[in-house]
Length: 505
Image 1 (cartoon, rainbow, N blue to C red):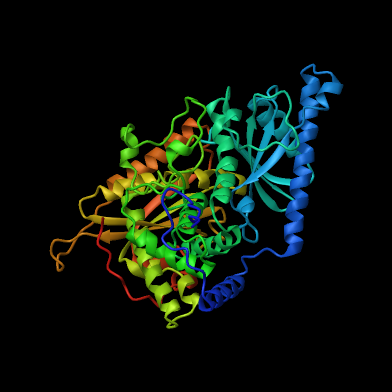
Image 2: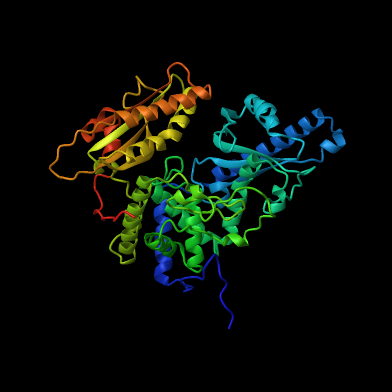
């Protein structure tokens, strides 16, 4: 008897064929997802394809020009190529309407990063269809961000140790990482991880629809943001890919249900992996990999989800105690909802009900990033958002704070006429009391001041701070939130789901 194919690090939990009821529930799920307008119509998808083709032609033209400037004969320069790759949600086939496209420009060895951030940046700056152009050279993965014909593009750069970039080049071969600097390796990693995820799932179409559902659920329930300590797109994709491996014949509705069940029972910090580390080719390259057995810092990670590609990394190193607790609670609620759906006691709409964040706590902190103009706001907002985890960590160490729950959505100030270039985030505070009747006087001045100080220090060091840039963080009661945020937004999620008690782990 032929043994069923094994996907991933263990054998499947079930290889049962879907029932007619499962198929009907999957159709119902797709219909509900379409009501949220997350599927891109064909004309918008064609526009994306056109934009990518134009960007690819622009990159090749630039490489040709720089090659000639570097004394390559034109006949040779015309053969060195160059190529734009896509990765992330667009490449996975799960992007939503209006979403950005993660892209990578791969160049031959004589084109370097300095060329990319100087002469290619200049070409983009002068291009009639490019707007909102920003270069972030000092990011963990250096990037140029811009809009091309209204589509947001994040463009990374990597040069390979090759004389020319062939048109049919793929990036899966680990040998391509030889003789590269670590920044190029990190830039290449997004494409390599995305391709591996697609190659490691049994049924790509079922994976895609189920992942669309989980991404929408995570956003509606306030659990989607790598920067703020929740999970980002690649982490949710790896988790769903693992569930697909465990249920290789399941249809999307079943995969969504099993997603919550598997994660509700998962024993963190056991890492989630799509394949064994020893199965990942490394070519004996010296780049660091995630390894909790030998790396002390890796042992502190709370919910490790490992990328399936060398050099394998934990995609969730930003998770905090508070964000972990929030996600585990939401997973329990999601599991209960799915079981109601499969028992025909609820429909899929219930899974995507908005979070009751603004009714959950009595105490909140409102963080404001204020700038004098749109360009400054974009830069300043990004910096402040990237440091909010520091404030969360400061709060978690306060004696009377049980939980610091950051809402990943940023909000406009209610007084838009006074603060037109302002972004706000809100942290809900779970309070620890030894006596329920105890009156607690919360003094959060120290953790707030330390956070504000770090933001200004980093901004000053990066020569970013300009006149009109301010960051504030204020401790407020629930009834005071309407002084900062539109009351219509505050009413979202008022009809709360029945609370499911989570025992902290």
